[in-house]
Length: 298
Image (cartoon, rainbow, N blue to C red; front, side):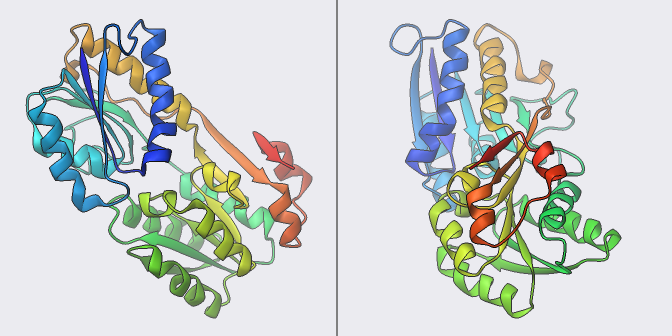
C-alpha cells in the first residue's frame, strides 16, 4: 500500500505531527518498508505551494492521501475525486465544503475535525483568570488562513459577554508579527490570543520571544507554543487526534469507503501552563487555574 501525506507545516513540525499517525498505523499492522510506503510532501507554511504538491501526489496514484491541516485538505480535495482522503487538523469541514455532513461525509473525503464548541470562551476565561486586570485582549490572526476569521468572531462574541474589548491584529507572514504586536500594545491590551495557523506554528520561537519582549501574556491553541515559551495553551490533544486519523486510514486501507466513515470530532482537550513564563511576566497563576491544568511546565 502507498500512503500520500500532504501537510501545510514545515519539515520538522510535519515530521513531529506525522509520527503519531505512523505509530497508529504500526499498531494496526502497517509497517513502513514491509506493507506500506509513505510519500510525503510539505509546503513549509507556503499555502500557494499546496495545489502543486497535491497534484504531484495524485500523479503517484497512492491508495490514500492523508491531509494534515485545512489548506492541505482543501488542496487534496480539489486535486482528486477518486483517491480516498483522510484529513486531520481541519476546523470546519462542512463550512469549507470538504464534506456535506459529519455523519455522512459523501464523496472521497473524511477524517478528524478540530471543530469544537466554546473554545473561544475557554481561551478568554483561562487568560482572564491569569491576567485578572486585563480589560482589552489582543488577537493575533492570520488573515489568509480560512479558520481564523470564524474563530475571531467567536472571540469577539465571547468577549462581549465578559465586558472585554478585543483588539484584533492581522498578519500575512512573519514580517507582520512585530507591527501587529505593536498595534496591540498601542491599544493597551493586557494579553493576547494567538489563533492557530501554519504561519505561527512555523515560527514558534519568534512568537514566544516577541510576546515576551512585549510583556504580553499569551494564549495559544497548540501546546508547542507553550513549550517554546508561551504562557498557556488550551486545545485538542494533537497526538491523540492524529492517532484517530490513523484508525480511519486503517479502515480505508482494509476496504471501507470514506463516505461511510463519519467525520470524528475532538474529545480530549488539554490546558498547559508555563510557570517559568508566568514568573518572567510577573504573574501569579491562581491555584484554581493551576488545578485545572493538564500539565504545568516549571
